[in-house]
Amino acid sequence: MERLLLLIAVSGIVYLALLVFVSSSSRQERYLLSLGVKWKELGEKVHNERLQLILNQSGLALSAGKLIVFRYSAALIYLGIQIISGFIRQLPLSLSDLLVAILILLVSSPNRFLPFGWLLAWLQRRTLIQKDGELISFIRLYENNRLRKRGYVQFGAFCAGVAGHFQHIRQDLYELSERAVDEGTEKAIEWFCGEFPAGHPFINDLRSILLATEGMDDDTEAANYLREQGQIITKISSDQYLKKWSSIGDLSTIINVIPSIATFLMIVSLAMQYILLIKGNFDGVGLFQ
Image 1: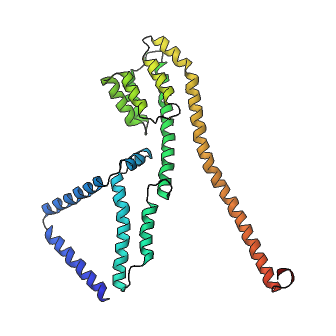
Image 2 (image 1 turned 90 degrees about the vertical axis):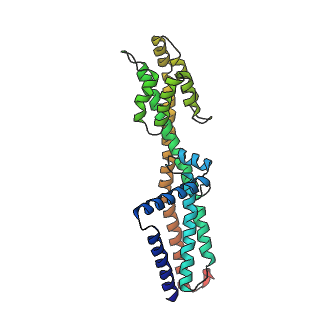
Image 3 (image 1 turned 60 degrees about the horizontal axis):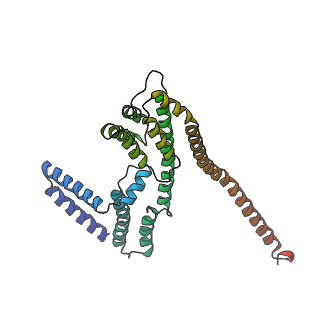
């Protein structure tokens, strides 16, 4: 109890000193602003570009620096609570407390073989599938726009007009629209397609279709070319559909198998209990000796 009262007294003195230090509203604002600046500087110091790229590709609006600070802060806060608790109870810091702090760091690690890293990898795959789906929808809208009988919207204006309908490629389409006006359509398309990975399954096909269509001066010729490429676009859409549902099918298979495995384990457990019950009743006589 004496140690608990000592901690309460020290905490009260520190809190009172802090209130005196920031007694005026202007000092409070400056103090909070200073804390915010220091927190931002700490996040910038531990910033990790690779982790930030993974977070962006996973669709998470998180800062890599803040995530790293949060991971280590959680472990340190846990250790601090255990140290204070041990001080009150007059107990030393146990090895299990250190192991729990290490476990917090491991669980929250972005390494792909650890839980949080596995979650990021799964979100990244899911986001890529959704992004590819939006890309196919974009090329479909582009095809419909160029095949309009009463004229079509110019490429830059078209990209800006349809960007609001998408979530994952919205900013890319806005920048594509600006680059199409400032640098030209060809360079803008090259930049846009270059934003996707080198091994992307169909980005090269889309690059060829966009460059060839926008490079034709004759609108009738461009429309005929797009009709010819309609089979390629349909195949891309079909492959994306199969890819999306195959991933969902794998997850569904796992979910469906879990009850069967649980039932099998339950039957094995009941059989073992039944055998042990019979063995106990026979008291180790005959067959069960």
